[in-house]
Image 1 (tube, rainbow, N blue to C red):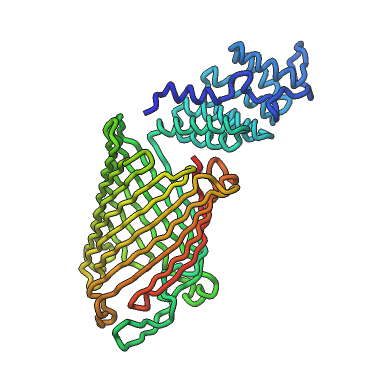
Image 2: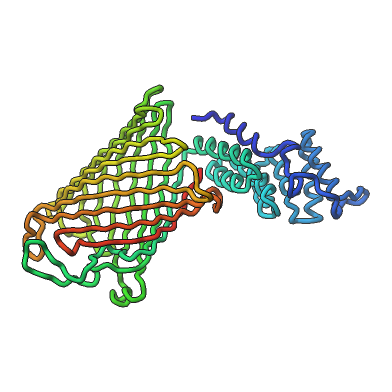
Length: 475
């Protein structure tokens, strides 16, 4: 854990509280005298530029009360003077009037007319929030400060301060949002008929079993709270939620009478424990989760999941991740019986030249169900590659994968499929992140994906092309 005094030092270093770091104008220099500052009876009226210099001198000489008076007089003349709000925030911070310092910093940010002013205003707001133990608020304002940093150096310093505060914050929030136009939102068949290899029968598929066009909107969030932490272990309580909403295109919505029935939601709560001995290359993870999965079409279930993970650094540029999990599912709508799933995944990651990274993952899972023909075994592999340096404004990564799933004893309408059902699926995916277009450290990410599946039961022959627009954190 990073000591508190180091976090404060990092924030102070980047807060712009010294005369050389305080934003004097749009370009960081004292502006020409423009306008005047109101004065009480018997006091000399001075120009705005002179008032700013007096306020800065008061901060240098540790006279925050004088700085407060100067800032208030400046605001009486111009309530939208961003520098005056910043000066007031600085003085309040020195006086340890932290709520007032935070409020003045926010107003300085709101009234700022340049990136440099926004940068300094956001940083002093973050420092006030940190001293109030409002770590999440401090992280947000440091994000905004980094976004408007006037140079690569100050941005790097601000990002370092953000990470230091994040390490101290017991609360962690991860959010993900995406919208994806797709030509197969329901995983439906590419054809109108159902043909089974080895059987002389042809069936006609219902509209909801065929590929439907539309848009898939998804939102996911994970809230983690650190219960305990030592040099060799970490224990967190985790809350998770994910939502999926499907909106069909006009023609398909009319075909389905406006009721697609493809929405889904998942809620969970769990405990996660991480262990790594000092100096060891091995890191172990244990987690347990309970939750509920719901589908608009039915088939809802509650679940209990246990997982064990292992990460080992095999070399400075080579690492191996492995995860084994087991999950028990209990139906909540009276249909079917309890099911169990088991999964094993291994991923090798290697750092390549130029900051590039490559990964190769292998996957096997087993579903045991009391329902005839539902039990399945899946084998899969995935190869990924990410460029370390962007091409122009775009960061690129991509992956290709293959899955094979077998269902023993599969039957349709009482007709057993010879040899059981066998599905094969392959996909290719590319992600483009636009790091130069961002807000508060979040940049848009576009994912292009194409997947094709084939089966000895043609109902499960399908293909899908989609474009997903989401957000990615840059730090």
